[in-house]
Image (cartoon, rainbow, N blue to C red; front, top):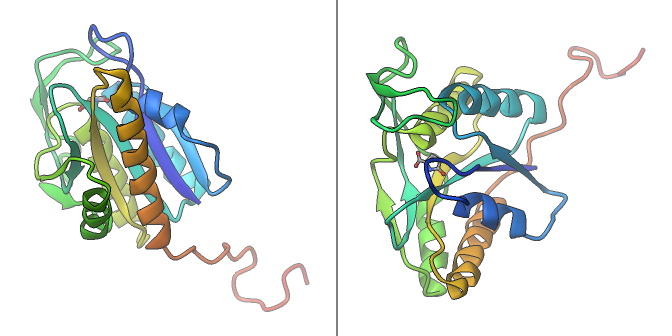
Length: 206
Ligand code: PCA
């Protein structure tokens, strides 16, 4: 199962394109869809809980990047919260480590080249990015990658920023973009073996 997430609206925007798109995506038993609060603490804790509880085979987090015209494939999660605007709980972080003992950054582990090739083939604008910002998106990306590294999971995980939807026709384009990203990750992901319920015995329940 692939875990996908988006964020709820923040700031003055009435909607968040990542949430609108994720909700519009057709249901698929192999894809769990969760909308996170745009709050450092809540979103960071929730992505860790979801990874622990759902045991996904891959994690793709989506958020909106206002003012961007292309899909942004985020390759780096930085250990740094720094944004003058408050999150939805009113918290402002103007320059602090996410996890003081954690590494400066983690690289995303999505099949970026394959995603880019597929977006390219469909004529969807995209770019590679090494800066996911200093707000809740980068924070959530970092917490997800940290949890995956710390628990020794070898599952793909990355962050993708979508543009805000400013015209109805963009809805179809960016919905196709989101679907394409997920499809490529599904194709590149090995399902994890079911968890061993009785380690050390070949005869569960005996
Ligand atoms: N975008 C913000 C937070 C939530 C979202 O969708 C960001 O880029 O950090």
